[in-house]
Length: 122
Image 1 (cartoon, rainbow, N blue to C red):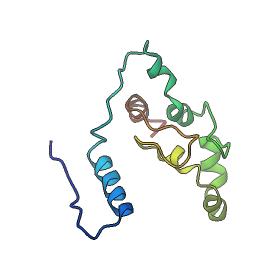
Image 2: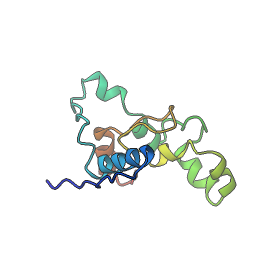
Image 3: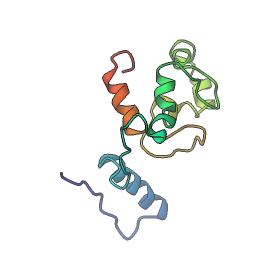
């Protein structure tokens, strides 16, 4: 596979280098992350499913305490509310790394596959 890498110049700050590294990891599918075992008997597989549970409506986001249907119904067009509460971002748009919302879980491969396979969750 082709690996896309952003060149780092000498004038980049530490923050810019960190941002570019994160972007490289995202674009390249998080090459340093190990893919978890898809065996349903694996406790890690069954324990790490907060994103899937959120998308199926089984749990609320944290810390805002909204179900996904609530976001769609009650938050649409409420830009001030959206601007004041940023915790929802990592619930609606999960990625494969830890974010600023410590109550959100990184997206696991088995969750992404289950969401992709279910037309109601897309």
